[in-house]
Image: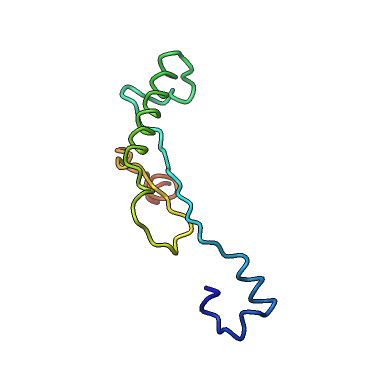
Length: 108
């Protein structure tokens, strides 16, 4: 943006200070969402069995490999974007709750 400031104003202390805050970096954040595992129920958060931990680890590992193979950060993007969020291709299959309490305002 500083290059668009008129030449006569670029040497002012204020413009130099503001220009020093800018950067040309684009940060890419790959969001990994824990997938639902077949047979998973309400006890998933307290399941510390070997099989439960192994299944969760394998699912996360598979999702991470899929994200790395897609490498969406290598796609061309808008240079003005400072942060780009990359979501997994598959979205959670469970519908999100509607309304603040999950009941779309139909509570008593």
